[in-house]
Picture 1 (tube, helix red, strand yellow):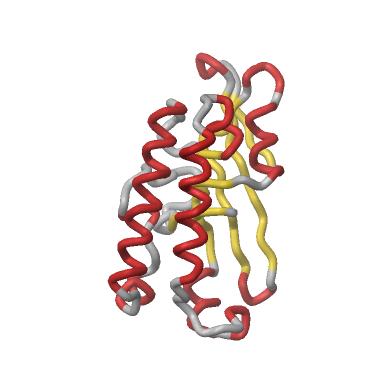
Picture 2: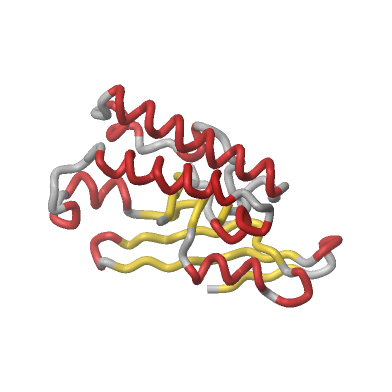
Length: 165
């Protein structure tokens, strides 16, 4: 499960803060959303924000199921998983998505990750020396059917920084 938010085309070096606008769907897509889907997006983002507050994450760091479980928030993690499933039921694009030109256009580009339970992301919270992700981006190249995760890391007190791909 991954919840991604538009970077607003700011690029990797200037992540947008976690706001409703920063993680909303492309404007063209949002216009076609049913009110039920819009309420699902709002509910999911509220749950993610609650989790971010409980885990005391940096402003743009992604929330993970690992972070929630470390803070004994298994119920909140389950609520997020359930909200994601409900949102997935609100189809935004006609299937098959990978053959839908509008979907490919909307998904193509860099996106900031706001929630994930994928092991390649949760492992970032298990790095030595208390390195922690400050932000994670997914660059989606829809026409080539590829994507890449890029994480920006920081050590305590800001003594060291780096990124990982």
